[in-house]
Structure formats: structure tokens, C-alpha cells
Amino acid sequence: MKSNLQIISGKYRGKKLVLPDMARPTQNMARGALFNMLLEILDFSKPLKVWDVFAGSGAFGLESISRYNGAQVVFTDNTDSSVQTIKKNLMSINENAVIEKTDAVSCIGKFGKDADLIFIDPPYAEFELGMFFVKKITNIAKPGAILIWEFENNQNMPKINDKWELLKDKNYGRARFLILRKQ
Image 1 (cartoon, helix red, strand yellow):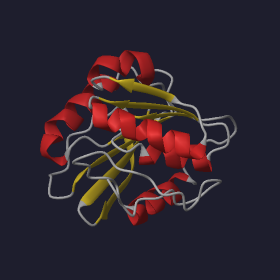
Image 2 (spheres, one colour):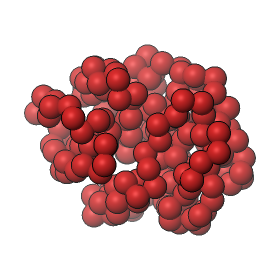
Image 3 (cartoon, helix red, strand yellow):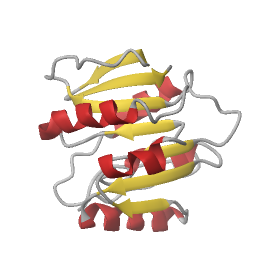
Image 4 (cartoon, helix red, strand yellow):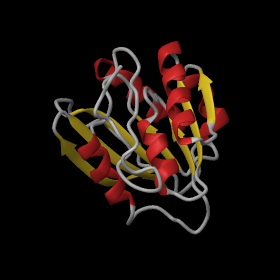
């Protein structure tokens, strides 16, 4: 699918990204603002391990590869079109990453325990899936892990386990971002 989606900053700045069918990607402006907020939150003393959970086009993980030198990125999505799109987008920047076609909740133990930065953006119509994912990863994520949860801004503030510290709560258009740090 043709789009205006692109990598915002870093070594691949301006690189156009393709979208899978039926995608609702995080828009360039919102993604740029989100990554600017992360500058003051993340520890850059070692390469980051990033998990783009409901990856779609892979824009979040691709932005991480572009911005964070040595970032190790894992993309997961349960649709063939998303997996193929992520592969195309990765080939266009000539980078390697782990891509798995899988249900996000089923691989929390595999990818959640080592991730420094976790981005979850389930379909807006499936808000409960995001809540379930956050609940399941709470006891698996390592202390200091940053979790970014994107959901539609018309949702009420979800109840967050006290093992997570709320660092930011921001709205950008239709999207609401919670940035959480594991205690």
C-alpha cells in the first residue's frame, strides 16, 4: 500500500515505508514526538533491545534501528501481510532483525524478558487485548524496561499495575500514548 509513512530521524531519515493492507500506522508526527520524549528516558549506554509487538508496518522498530546505534529489534505480528511488509521495509534499508509471525501474548516469555523498549499498538478496536498484554508482561519484563502503549484516545485511563511507573501520558490526534517504566 502506498503511504506517506517514513522514517523520521537517524541514519535512514526520510526513507519511505510501505504499509500492509488495512494498516492504521502511528503517524509520522506522533512517532517523531514520541521518540523525542524517549531521549530523556532511555539509557543509551548499551545497545537497546527493542520489541515492536503488534508491528504492522514495523515503523516503530525501523525508527529504532535508524536512531539507536546497534539496536536489536524484534518484530511480531500475526498477519501474513504485516510480516511481508516488515520484510520489504527491512530490505529497503538493508538491515537485519528478528521477524516472527505469531500471536503477541504467546511470545511474551520469549521476547519480553530481555527487551529494554517495548512498543504495543494493538488494533484500536481491541483495547482489551492491550490491557491483557500489559497484565501478562508485568511479571516478565525486567526492571527499568520501558513500555509504550498506544491506544485510541477516547478510551478511559486503564488501571495500571503499581509495578509500572507512569512516565508520560500524551495525546496526538486520535492516538494516546502511555509511557511506562517497570519498577
